[in-house]
Length: 226
Image (cartoon, rainbow, N blue to C red; front, side, top):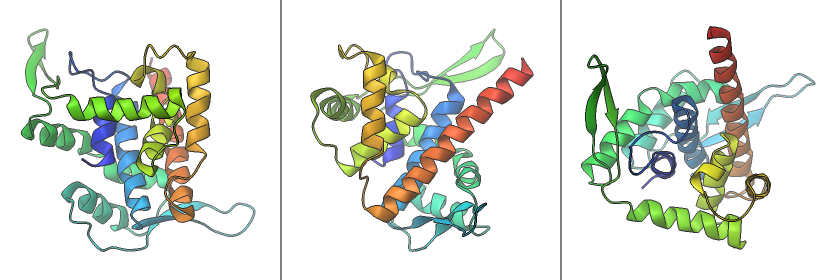
């Protein structure tokens, strides 16, 4: 599975099939995972223009397809209009991404689609687990990293960084015995470490900054609307 599928599984309740945090943060984290994986694979790189007010962009530095349909489509979208800010690339990629990944996971027998209606009118779909073995293995790995103290793999470091950016670590690892504040601090320390080489680290840092900015912006928009 790609990293984004791991993120989506971790942020979806196995029983109810609903997001364990608000859907906006879930979607942002999933798109961020795709960008982080493309960066780790050497397809995207973060670049900062010179000067006091220099801006960071995410550029496609290698357009060679990876042979994975979701990643290759995201790579095409990322480079469709040239380099752009990490937030803009995040927006390009996240449209329709969550639905596509849910459907892929259901086709593999990992989840199932439960269709219903709110008030008998508004159609809804939830995605409870059918086979949670892969997700359980991922969760065990994160427990070993954040609770036991094992050094993370680059994939686990990316996962931790993304979950930390959307403040989801305690929800993904409940009941560890470690206070949530300490768990969050450990996650931030992992996120600040090596996630696959210097170029990948810079790109992932840019993505995580964009994820945080997108979460803050969505919260501000929700507050204004209310």
